[in-house]
Amino acid sequence: MLHETIEGMESGRKFIRGEKIHRGGQGIIFKLHEGRTTYAGKFPQTRWNFFAFSPESNLPDVVDPFDIINSRYRFEREAELQQIVHHQGITPVVLFDRTAVNGEPFLVTRLATSDLEMHVLLHGELPAESAYVLSETIAEALAALHNESIIFSDLKPSNVLLFKNRKGVMKGRLTDFGGAGYSDRPNTLVADKNYKAPEFDETVHSERAEFTLDQYGWAKGIVGPSFTGQLGKPNSSRVMIPKGRTIWEDVVAPIAARASAKNPAQRYPSMGELVNDLQEGRKRIIKALKKQQTILP
View (cartoon, rainbow, N blue to C red):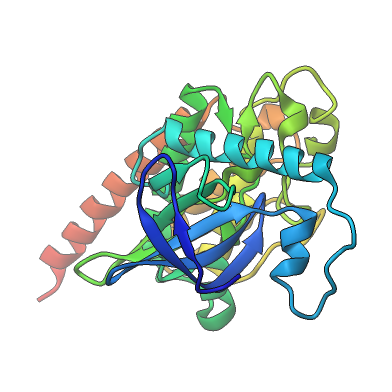
């Protein structure tokens, strides 16, 4: 199964499937090699290929057709949602081919340096300025999704890929739209228990989901780990960023606290207004830093 040639019947492009990178959401992710370029390739996670890609397990005797059909439907919906909004805070799709020669659809994206969860586990929090920029970028991406009536829902550190630009600066992008969905179809939403809003379980059984779900997930799953180096816990209180260490933390702290309020009515009316506060905060920070530089001898 590994190191086989994957050829898209729609695109005509050929890749060599390499080692498995990750399993999560609606798919299994492998390295895909095209010449000298390496990408991340995602394939539907069915009961059959879950076992096939796990050497420690035995293959099932019978393949459930419904399992394959349902998994493929959710996988294709995930790929389509990821392509609707083009934003620097969303991992761009290089290629989505609905039918490879072997019958599998697959999604190709850039290969990330790491993800936020892995960075936190290995190195702790991000530098304060980088954490602020990453949090702001993801908030802007969420606002853009909300303009298209899309709720990302599954906001957690492992769903933020980290990329290094040419200057070596880390940039964050959302990935894995397997838990995302439209606000008028809340039963399709999925969220991690460590980062989901208190009202999430009730929301998925309602007629409509509110965009404030993403505010809570943003604060708990993105801002908290980025600034504190700590991963989330279920049913924990609102995000508390330590003050008095850097001006970046002092500015983001009240924004994150409001976004993670237990009562949705106490959060921001919209993600756009949250973004406005972040942008205004960054302007105040830059002004304050310039003032400090002029005071220094």
